[in-house]
Image (tube, rainbow, N blue to C red):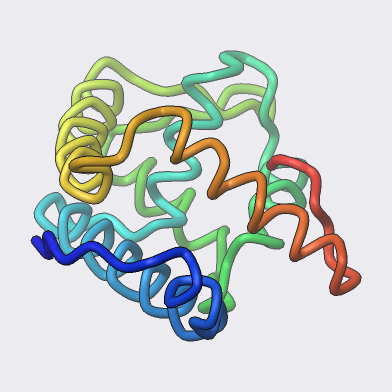
Length: 151
């Protein structure tokens, strides 16, 4: 971890694209490595979290429509749902996806591993600074014509 202190002028002169890309690359790589310990991908993780967050409401097409915009690897979500079902992590009744106890246990393991990555990333950064960073990036996205709303 770096402890070098820079002036506001030095920091303001930095290229945001480099720092945003490098942060995203390292964060995503860390999360993907943590998920891979349970043979999961990010789409597996998103699926488990959404189903756990709104039990009894997700059907395949609706969940795919919700998750696809966040996917940078053009995932076949049907394969993800089938894989989680084959593992016994999901069941499907009348088209509705439900997390099993085994699936919840796997989701919790993945959550705990991901939390370690987030904790490491935020070392020395309080909630105020983190929120200001997110708000700044969110506003930059909106200024450049992207969706600045929170996911």
